[in-house]
Structures are given as structure tokens and as C-alpha cells.
Image 1: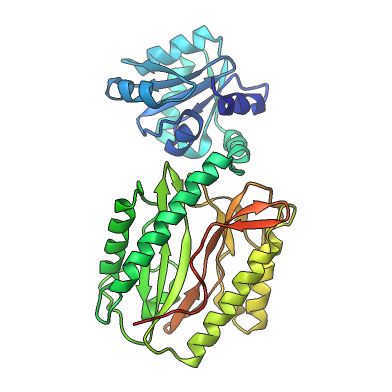
Image 2: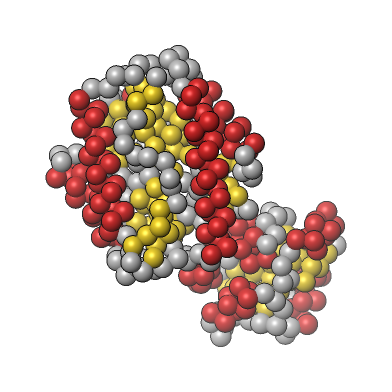
Length: 359
């Protein structure tokens, strides 16, 4: 059993004899095997990756610290493991089980005299483990960020009047994969003109026009880990209002970055950016949180929001991404991904943030 599995087991309450994990990302985290079609059972003595025949060879080659068991009858295999370890209760990964799957697994366990614990407690334990990153994890995130930046720099010369948003998004993803990304960490946001007032706008058949702002909210995956970055560029001449909004967001983002360090509350980082935007008269146009954690999932704890009073810890990876969105006109968002340290943060983004005019 590897160290992460041992840490998980040590944090389980006495009422639970084992943990059953089925989410892809948590199987990657604990067992280094992110297949959808397998089950990870961690008892107090051993960890088992339970797979069917299709995945046996791959699991045996890739899994870390787990015994691979190939099942023909899942009920029978679970029953044997319950008997071997005298399991009376197994805690479910609550957020990952749908109602039907939970009922099916509970029925299998009950036939072996084992009780299912269906609460959010295991999810909370896993979150505590995943919320801070190891040097190895940070290295993967750093690489994902580097790939995203290189792909963006290769794509910017393609920004021409009349080019579709969807064309640019497709080119970006192609270049990301060519540079070594496993894929994108979310559906890329490449939007222009009035659509930039939509924080999560979808690239489509909107053509780039002179005077537009263009938002690139992008991220890749490397070894399962995500990156996340946003840059807003101008195409052709921009108005004084556009310049003023852009500079307001840039200054707010810098204040947010300067507030980041271990021991600072998440809500105080949010406040550092939000207060500046509010005092500039645009508070009502900044409606989302200032940031979020990043790791195996693109959105992880902690939430860098006005409601989260939890303190940042060294080793957390978070985003700082304030924005101003004027409906029907345009929007600006600037986002960096940083590693929290005892005396500040390490910015994983290298691209400049001064207003850049393309074309």
C-alpha cells in the first residue's frame, strides 16, 4: 500500500473499516490508474484495484501500491475481500456515486454482511489530502502551464480580421496536443467583441473585428494535472473606455496576487481584488469569485471567494482572476495560477499582462 493510501486510511473514522473510491481523478491520485471502469478498495491492511479483464494488463503495468484483482463476478469478488479483511463497514466516495450505482454496490456489500456508509465524510478527507500539492504535482502543473502558454503564443499570429473564434480555439487545442498536452483541462474559451462580457462564453461563428477585445481562457492537462490562465488582448485600435477597464482589472489582479500567502484567508484575497474594482465603480460587473484551487480537477478547493474564511496553506495552487463584464459591450479578465508559499506566492504564468494590441 502506498503512502497516500496509508494517509487516507489513517484519517478514516473508527466506524469505517475501508474506503471505496470510484471517481477517475481520485483513482489517479491514490492508485495512479485513472480508468472509469474499475473500483479502488482501500482497507486498513491493503489497497485493491478491482478491474475486469479489459484493464488487467494496463492496471498491473501502471498502478502504484495496489494489488490488482480481475473480477468476473463483482459481487463475489467484493464478498471475498470483505471476508478476508473482516469488513463490516465501507465508506463510499459520496460525490462520485449516483443513486443507482450506490444502491447496486450497497446491495452487493449487504449480501456479504457489510454496511455502506453513504456520507460526504470521505470526500472531505480526500479534499484535505489533495488541497496541497507535492513538488511532483506542482511540476506537472507547471508543465501544463508552459504548454498552454507556448500554444497561445503560436496561435496569436493567426488572429486576423474575419477569423472565426472557433478557428482560433481549434488551432489552440491542436498546438497544445502537438506540444505534449494530454488534452485540454476544460472547453477552451476564445471569444471576441461583445461576447467577452460573458465570463464563460462559447467560441462559435463570431468573426474577429477591429476594435474587439479577445478573451483567451485556456488550460491543458499534463500527467492528469490541469493548468488555467486567462489573457485578454485587443485587436486593432481600442477606446479609452476599454483601456480604462483593462487597467482597472490589471491593477485589481495585481493586488489579489500581492495578498496571497500562507495564513491569509481566502476571502481576504478576494477582497483585495474586489475592493479595487468596486472603488473604481464597477463592483456590480464582477460577479464571480476571484479564484479557485487547481490540480487533477480544474476547479478544486479552496474557493477564493468572499464567503470562504479558510486560510491558505503553503503548497496550494490557486488562480487569481478578477474581471469586469459590461453586458452588450465587452469584458476583461486576467488570470494567473500561483503556488502559495509562506511569504507570498510563485506565479506559474509567464506571459505579460500589459494591454497588448494585436494586428
